[in-house]
Image (cartoon, rainbow, N blue to C red; front, side):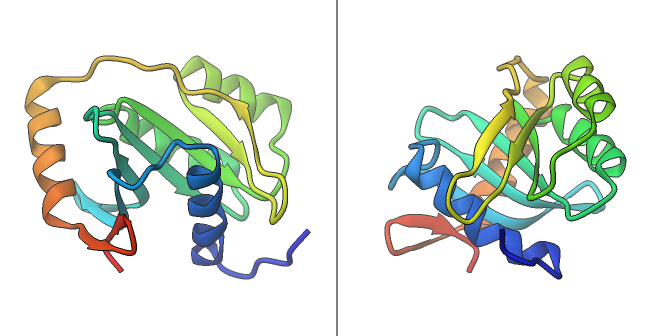
Length: 147
């Protein structure tokens, strides 16, 4: 396992996994640090089929990550916590209760511990989110990104 010191170091591993599992394709938008209602979402994705997903990256304090991902769930079709550390059973139960997913990140074999179910969201929030995602992304090397 890689020794991560900062949350932003997780981002390339998550993006690589998203691409390798085809959750992100050439025609997807990927935005890092998306400003959203006074907060920043670590990684946001918009697919060609207009499905949205939010990812909160965490090195510790999975309970806080569940809270943040829960806020994201209000506006995104799917919401996940991504961490290199195995969550407790209680954290996974909380995530499941709130329709959140959990991705266990590893430099070689990341995997979904819990899938976030697809849920419809408020159309007013959806419109605002799509505008925000599109305005924060710039095409770079086949994948949309804010970098």
